Structure formats: structure tokens, C-alpha cells
Image 1: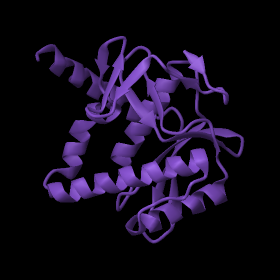
Image 2: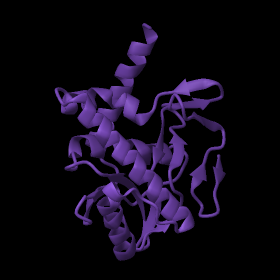
Image 3: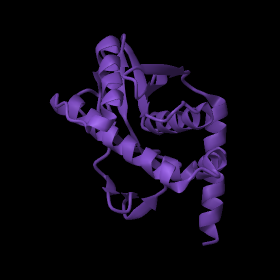
Length: 206
């Protein structure tokens, strides 16, 4: 494990294959947090038109890329149709004044061997906060609580603890909402751990 200049662990040993969206560690493919959480996604999005889901995914990717360019380089570059969401991000940035520890930070759990990418590990008001951006119509706490806890526990497995977690919900009208989550959310961790057991059981019989 290595630390970046802000003291956050980073993992050059964790490789990411963009085309297939695969995380690899020492030649072993690690499941992503979103892959492990697929049963929850399926329960939530069952029956929703594929095109709607695809459009939402494209929007999320475009806004995440624009946000990363702004955080790293101060570049404001966003497609006009997504301008409202980016405006919401700028409001969050200027009002909350986060100090980034990293952006789009790839990570893995040392023991359970799953991986993911945290949007914005940062410091706000002297506290370490783990932030994920969402551009969906609403924040679904069933999913987001589990996702954030999985990321936080992955960092924790390498000795780095967060004081809190938050979803920054970016909206098309240029506003945002910051939804706070407590540290050490046992219920969300039990859910994710159970999903890992299911995922590993399925792999065993493939």
C-alpha cells in the first residue's frame, strides 16, 4: 500500500481494464461493488425500459468526467444538455469547500477482495468525508447506503477511516442536495457482506 501526497492510500497494484470494466489484482479479477450489488439494482430497476437506463448511465458518465476535469484541472467543459447538473456541482463545490484527497480513486478490500472507484474522498470542515455523486431523479437510500459503506470498509481494511459519507445529488435545475450517511453503518455492511457471500457462492459453481 502507498499513500498519495494527501495521505490517502492508493493502489498501483490494482489494474483497471476500461473496455471490459474489470478490476485486476495480481492477475485475479476482483468483482466491483456494483457487480456485487446487482441483486439490489435488479430489484429496484426491474421493468424499467433499457433505453431509459442507458440514457441515465450516459448522463452519469458525462457528468462524472466533467466533474473530474474541474477538480483536477479547473476546466469547465460539459455538454449543454447536462449544464444544469454541472451547475449543481459548482454550487456544491463553492458552498461546501471540499479539500479533495483524490478523485475517481480506485480501491479494493484487502481481505474480501472486491474493488471499486470512489468519486471524491475529501475533507470538509476538518472531517474526512467519502462522497459519491448521483444524477438520478431521486437518491435511493437502499442502494447508496450499501455502496458507500462498501467503499468506506475497503479503505478501512487498509487502515484509513472516514468520519462520514455523503451522496451529492446533482439536479437538472442547477441545484444539489447533500445526503449524509453515518460512519460504520452496520446494517448496510451486513447487506453487502451477504451479497459477497452470494457472489462467491455463484462463482464456485461456474
